[in-house]
Image 1 (tube, rainbow, N blue to C red):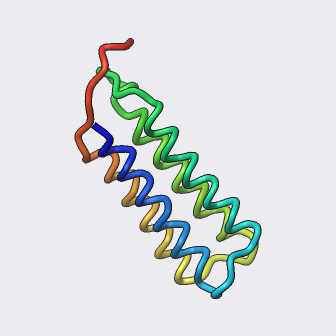
Image 2 (tube, helix red, strand yellow; image 1 turned 180 degrees about the vertical axis):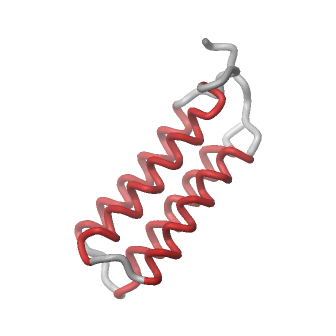
Image 3 (cartoon, rainbow, N blue to C red; image 1 turned 60 degrees about the horizontal axis):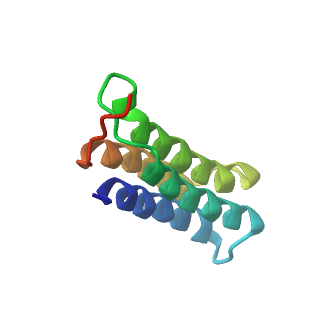
Length: 109
């Protein structure tokens, strides 16, 4: 029941960790990225799995936006490094993971 939220949480925190811990210190921007990662997991939990065209991808959309926001919060202030490109790949994998993981389906329209 919580597989999509857990996938989003693990993916966003991994994205944050790879991007934030590259220099051995956690900056204020990095903490902001962690807040975005946690907010993403909550958002993926709250958004229902709705049958239909757009609704079927709502959780995936939320996960992709959150993971990308987590990445941007650490990548933009100092430029993009090789480790931050790896974090971007994790952000993409997070979105794909949320899409692939089955979840309960709501009949809300």
